[in-house]
Every structure is written in C-alpha cells, then in structure tokens.
Length: 95
Image 1 (tube, one colour):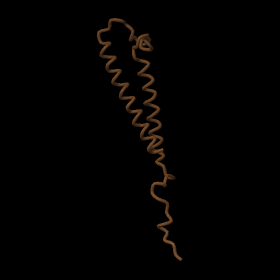
Image 2 (image 1 turned 60 degrees about the vertical axis):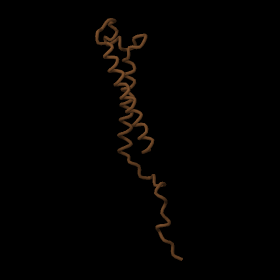
Image 3 (image 1 turned 90 degrees about the vertical axis):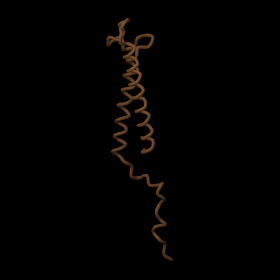
C-alpha cells in the first residue's frame, strides 16, 4: 500500500518553526523605545506636585504657553501609547 506524501504533511497552521526573527527583533526594539518615551513623557507632565517638569523649567507659575505645552505633551504621550499598543499586538501575532 502506497501512502501519498501530501497527506503526511502537517497542516499549514501548525508550521511555527520558521519565525520572522528580524521582524520580532525590530518590534522588540521599537516596543522598548516606545515604553521609554512613555515613561519620559508621563514624568514631564505637570500634574499636581509638579513632577520632573519643575526640574526642567516647567514650574514657572504664570507661563503664557504652558497650556499649549501640556496639550502637545498630552498628544505626544497618546501617540507613544498607541505605538506601544500596536507593537504589542504585532509582537503577539508574530511571536
């Protein structure tokens, strides 16, 4: 009795031996960069106690452009969070 070798192959969804290593490495580096940016931007926010933004001149009191700076810092923080989320989802997909 002869067995067809096509039927002996594993189904396509079980082939996980060949992972895209370069893609995974790039996504891990990108994830670390996004996470570091998130930590930096969150620490730069003014908040109630001032935070680290006081160290860099952000606690001047009556600065005219401080609301614009906070709004832009909020936007940059949201972009960094979204970037981290996207790289997280892609890492789960490719891992």
